[in-house]
Length: 253
Length: 253
DNA sequence: TATACTAAGCTGTATATACAACCTGAAACA
DNA sequence: TGTTTCAGGTTGTATATACAGCTTAGTATA
Image (cartoon, rainbow over all chains, first blue to last red; front, side, top):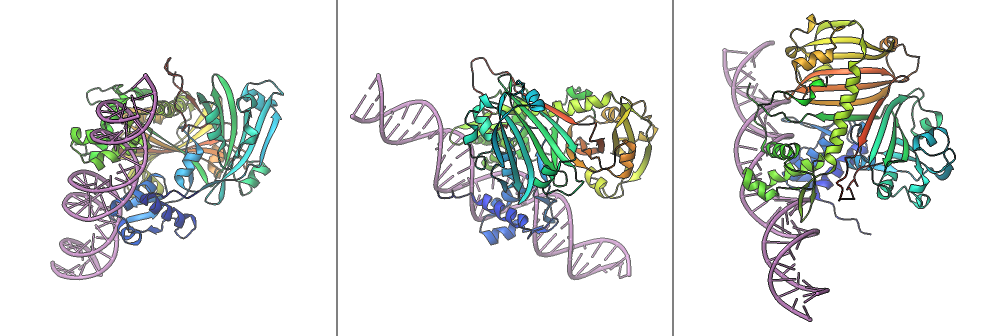
């Protein structure tokens, strides 16, 4: 299948991302200016501007009016406070590579898993274990259990092509989710998968998703503390000038 | 102080957001097309395009080439999630017991602090260092800097009676907040304050709060990984009775 | 030497224009 | 009636142009 022709601004983005990912451009290095991109890539300045602006939004570079554009400290990010597909998130950042599933198996739910999924001990569940990479470095171990009755064809999926998230979204509309974020020391297996230093903490997201009033899947997402952080933004709705009271008075800083 | 004139594209965004926030435009409603905005707001189509494109990125609307732009179903949800997270997490802080402030001082902003607060190196800031307890155990070290011009009487406050958060809310209404969550090993001082085991990771929340378009305060909140976790919940809104299918394709499990 | 000024380069925004791809509904047709 | 075609509206992208505001380095000046 022929690669669809990407838009010009995306080609510019890809070029910059490639040069950052490869190490050719390091943090704080200067990125070609818009006018330099106009010449080197034969695009208009507006196209170069859009490419660099989107790279700014995505956290690849930082721009200083009057000065230039510079590679930012690359730290993998995701939005804690939004429930969001990590595939989208990382696709937006460029080069996520999902390994072949280390393990896809049928199991009987025990202990924590059974309780989390609200099924009886011994009920049938599927277990997935994957490692996600970004820019060649492992960034997430996804350790997921799925209630078998929701995903009868789970074992047939190619989870290096379709993320479990995308697959699950297709079979069960998302209605409710809980997530818990923890800092903890990884066990040896996780530490190995994520290529972490000894003693380095991991950021763990536990996410349980419900559909139709029943738990569907429970995921433990492990990330290396040194290369991953969660970010969230909050914006108050703009208060009308005449209405003095903002609903958020009870919130604190 | 006159409100700085916003860019035209931001004015367009604000208009749409206001109409969605007020309920005038409901999910699935059609948003004015680019050409309609060109006429009604006297902007160029590219400016209207940028506004709508950014609103798409931010989840307010969804666009269908050839058809139109429509209010997104999921915006309210993820927005609710954002607000609830910060609200919950912060409401919880209201019930903590705060020790006497370990330190309240006037400082000159340097490095990271100056950058975070968008003030010049050497500008005057106040520094607070407090330890919060829950059930008799230390649960959070609050290491906070406040732009001095926002809090002239900061040094006179009794922060064992009024939390810094409550004080800051009083002087500067919360408009915008960013937070970053990290897992990392604490330094010796933090570890001591939190009574942590050697090698135990801490969950660190970096929170920057804005008011009136300017950063007001930057806080580093350290928590013991073994006794603290962040939780978030997401609940889909009730689906309209007649509409069975909710478009949540972009959400993940 | 130290200060002030200036010019060049950069980002940020805004506009006018153009064409392609896509969707929808209405008109034409079988 | 059922189907096809087509025109108009809409988004997506790309370009050329313009001006404002900021930064920096180099130059002129005191």
